Length: 115
Image 1 (cartoon, one colour):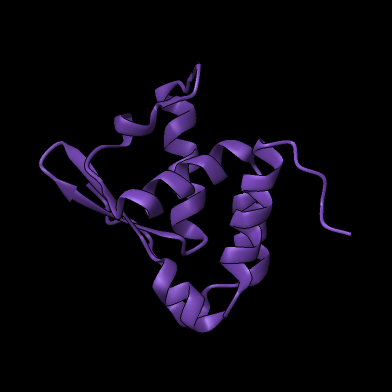
Image 2 (cartoon, rainbow, N blue to C red; image 1 turned 135 degrees about the horizontal axis):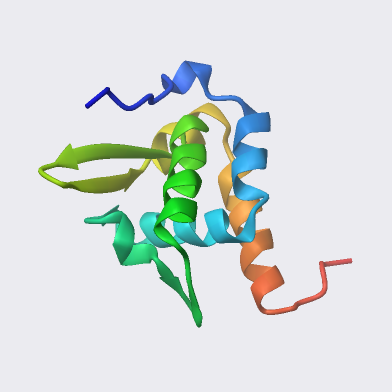
């Protein structure tokens, strides 16, 4: 198996973060990984609410999050363990991830943006 690409925190770019989290499914996956600290298997997040994400789509979402520098994936046997890199990214871009994730959470609650 070829190694997975994880950018160094110095190489993480805001544009890649914004792209990765612009998709509501990826934002939900990232929020869950961040909340839980570590997700043991990719399939653990395949059900988001009443939707089930197909394996092929799930793999693609994890790749985008990983290559944006938002998560670290480690192989353990046949499964992947996924860890949030929120502390590393927050140190590089203070306030960026909380702002994005707060906006995402507000959109889930259909709250109007603050005036």
